[in-house]
Image 1 (tube, rainbow, N blue to C red):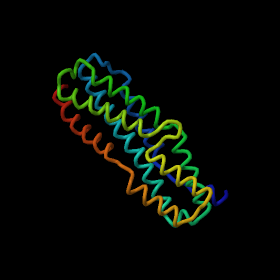
Image 2 (cartoon, rainbow, N blue to C red):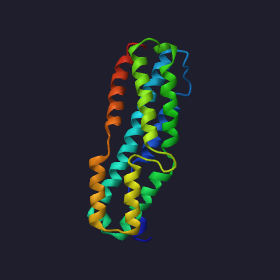
Image 3 (cartoon, rainbow, N blue to C red):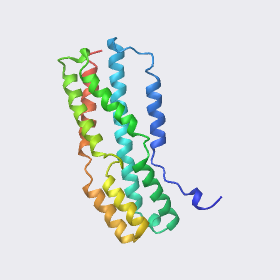
Length: 200
């Protein structure tokens, strides 16, 4: 086994997908025409949103931290693995289809008769808009949180692996990447959990 093959960077995406699939499997026998099942499904949906958004944000943070880590960017083998993991994050469609489903699910829930004219409906509507905005910010084709920064880091790591330059870009990414929308959605999810308790 080569020394390169044992160098790994875990973004936590595989574990998140396992949790998401487990949540989806437990709701197969529910009926949205039953209020209790509908409420439980919405609770699952917002848990899925939280899991997916946090996983995408955290993956960006992990990658950027690695590009600012001298022990990584100073080792050509580790840097090569980091570039590959960045490429996987930007081009593979592991979490994106699940996020797309959640965009539709939250929007549909906001129009359901069980939440009509309630505070929960208002929050769901806001969450649907925010989640769609978050999805759009991920980009299309090349996708991911802070994909512009990651593409820049990946480019220089491949073509001009200067440690000072990579650290500078990584620090800039941390300072400028806005996680405000993610925080706003987490706040809405907290409010929604409370409001749903009065519907069931």
